[in-house]
Length: 128
Image 1 (tube, rainbow, N blue to C red):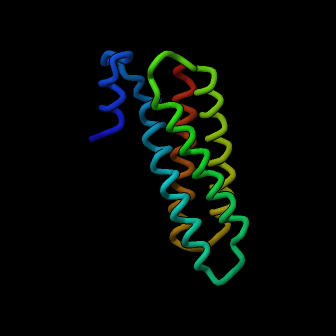
Image 2 (tube, rainbow, N blue to C red):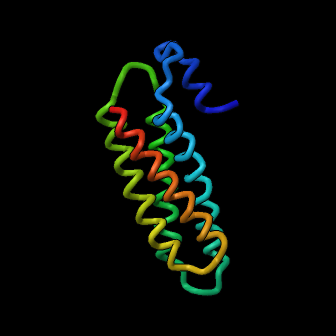
């Protein structure tokens, strides 16, 4: 089951899926999970990772809120979806910038996911 197929099956969408927005929703879901996992891994690191943990958890929460709002298709709230996409881009860029400072696999993966999510949110913004 894919989120794109779920959104596409919504009666108000009637099969006319906004593909870039659906991709942003999907990757915001993934980014939330990756950031949460990275924050947890940072807790286990021996060095002080407080800022990275904070940025990862903030990004995870913002990604969750973004995909939740953007996945709703009943009626319309385009202004809020656009604002959420912009906030998600900002959170992902902040998180990626912090994670790229650290030489470990979990932060490298988090950086990659955050950059991908930000790019997808930017592409979705272009459809409004």
